[in-house]
Image 1 (cartoon, helix red, strand yellow):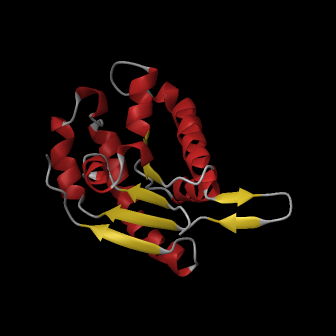
Image 2 (image 1 turned 90 degrees about the vertical axis):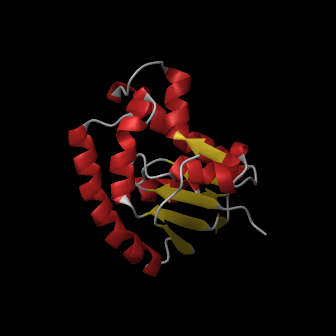
Length: 166
């Protein structure tokens, strides 16, 4: 059975990381929050975004290239973000190309994420204006992901309504 990429998509606080820890080996999960914690201590700092995502994509591609499964734990609400993750699953040899199966797990509850946001680790609390934008992006993502599945970008989509916090 070939290895696979699982893309978690949803607003902050919707339970993506909690759910991933329950259902996947920890060493398969690549998290933007964990990378941020490695790079700096303190509240969210957008000046690190380029480096965070460069490391995020590199770690995912490395896992997949070495035959391991990878779970991409980020919001993945934008079409371009999901497309970039799919690129990590396209390995090109000198004469061949093969794709690693990509599965999306969409966390549908924006209410849960919004309500959980203030209780998150202070480093990961998302400002109100950014949360509002992500909720709007989430609505678009719900529509776009179905279209992307129909176009063959993914092998499956799983919808998760809510995640009980540990």
